[in-house]
Amino acid sequence: MKSFSGFPAGKLRFTSVPNLFFSELLPAIDDLAELKVTLHIFWLLSRKKGDPRYVSLKDLSGDGVLLGGLKSLGQEPGESLQEGLKRAMARGTLLHVAVEQDGKRDELYFMNTDQGRRDVERIRQGQLELGVAVLPPEPPLEVERPNIFVLYEQNIGLLQPLIAEQLKDAEQTYPSEWIEEAFQIAVEQNKRNWAYVHAILERWATEGKDDGKGKGDSRKDRRRYIKGKYADYIEH
Image (cartoon, rainbow, N blue to C red; front, side, top):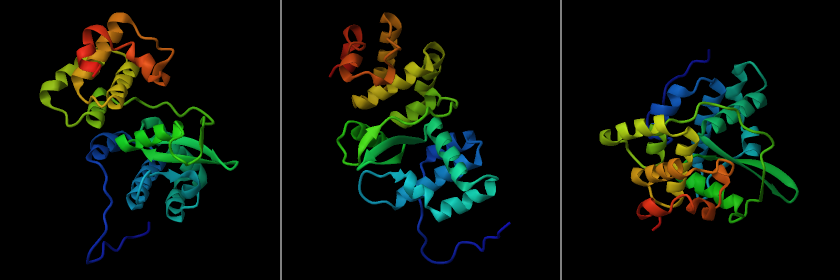
């Protein structure tokens, strides 16, 4: 084991990591490659300036600090890097989009924040000149979906005790895929409140939802689910 001599005296630079990482992600991460890759990307993104903020597979594959830290995991560092990225994407920590430009392909990774989600959508719509978005080569690994409390804090804000029981009831009532998509719609419509999300879920439960479309629905398709009785919550 290589010993650490301690942090030096004087002014030190720090990397900002959301509190939600320690309360929700860290207890759930059970793979060392995923943990190392996730924390390293937090560090890289904190050093970037301007927008959009992302890291590319090309940059990660040439990062000596990261690869050096992955050598101890019992396989080639490049394999550990790919494994860590897949797990972080499947968990929902990272967002991924593959792009092609001038005949060359690269994989871009964004932290799953509000800004990161907007940037990925802008790339997919051709609004950012980072290349043409292409489909990923293979589906990500399956991991446990984030529970409704995590979704609430990620997309609406600090969880209040009065709303906790409503969230528990909703989690037991509606499919997890519906809950995730309802939160996503709330973010897209800039209606970040539980009444809005719950209205969508109740509407789908009452009149049905075309699961064949899912997250790929256009805004026009989605609007047909949120009319009528709950329009006052949604259509503004």
